[in-house]
Length: 378
Ligand code: PMV
Image (cartoon, rainbow, N blue to C red; front, top):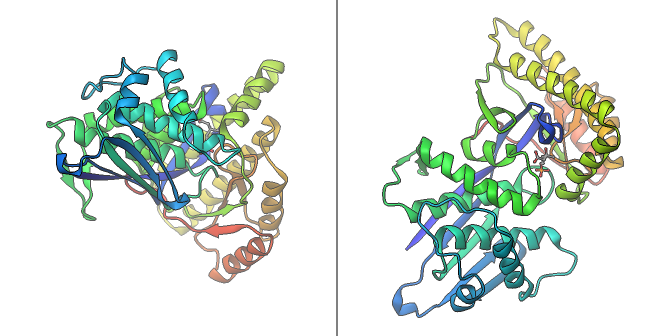
C-alpha cells in the first residue's frame, strides 16, 4: 500500500519574528510543494525497516523496527492521537538519529530527521515503511520547507491512521482533507515544527495546511479573502541561515531591550493588520489597485526597517533592496531573514521589460529569482 501527500511552501508578507512575540502576521501559500510518499511492505517483502529517502539530497536513512521498539518503548502509535512532547522520547529519537551517518555540520538535516521519526512513531508506531520525500522548495531559505515537510508527512500519516477520513478530489486529482482532518494535520505538523525550530509561532504549518492567504496572531487563524492580485518576485540570496538561531537572537534582543522591542512588535502588528485590510477591501477600478499597491509597498518597506532593527537583515538582503529600489520597487525579507529569500512587490502596471531588467541584475549578483503563484491550495 502507498499513500502520497503534498503541502505548499509559503511567503510571509508581513509580521515574521514579531508573530513569535504575539503580533499579527500575514502569510500566503505559494505553488511550490513538498511531496511525501509512504509505502508499506507486504509480508512477502520481508522488510522490517523504517526508511527515509530524501530524494533531492540523495540521502537515505533506515532503522530496524526492532531497534525503534527497543529504544522508544513507550511509543505505541495510537491512531489519531496527537503526539505530546516528552523529554524521554526526544532523547530516544536523538540516539536513533546519532546512529545514522549524516553529512557534517547539518543541524537542519538532523532536526528534520528527528521530526520525521517523532511524527511517524508517535502516530504510526514502529511499523516498517519507506518514506520518500521530494521538494520543489529551496531548503532553509524562508519559504517554509520544513513546515511543508511536516504537513505533507502528517497528511500522509493521517490518511493511513484513520478509516473515517473523508477525502474529496480537487481538480488536480489530489484528495482534499475535511475541516477536522486539517485541524489534526496542523496540530501534528506544529509538533514537528517545534522539533525543527524550537519555538515556532505556528504560522508556517498553518498556512501550509490551509493554503490561500491567512492572518495569524497568537495561534489564531483568520482566512484572508484576496480582493486584488498580489504578485511578488521571490529572490533567493542563497545565503544559508538557521531559523532557530535567528528566532533566538530576536528573543535575546527583546530581553535586553524590552520596551523598545515591544514598540517594534506593536508597530509590526499594525502593519500586518493594515495590510490584510487593504488586500481584503473591495476594488472599483485600476486606480484603486495602484493606490493599494503603493500602500502595500510602503508597508513592506516599513516592515523591512523594523526587521532590520530586530537584527535579522543581512548584506545580501540589503543588496536586493538596493538593486530593486533603483527601479522604485519595494522589497522586504521573508521568513527568518539572515539571508534566505526576499520579496519584491511587482505592481500590476509594471512592464515585463522592467521585471526582466531587475531579474537580470539580481541574477548577475549571484541570486536566483522566481515568480511563484500566491495563494494556492493547502
Ligand atoms: O524562515 P522560515 O520559513 O522558517 O520562517 C520562520 C518565520 C518566523 O516568524 C521567523 C518564525 C515563526 O515561527 O514564526
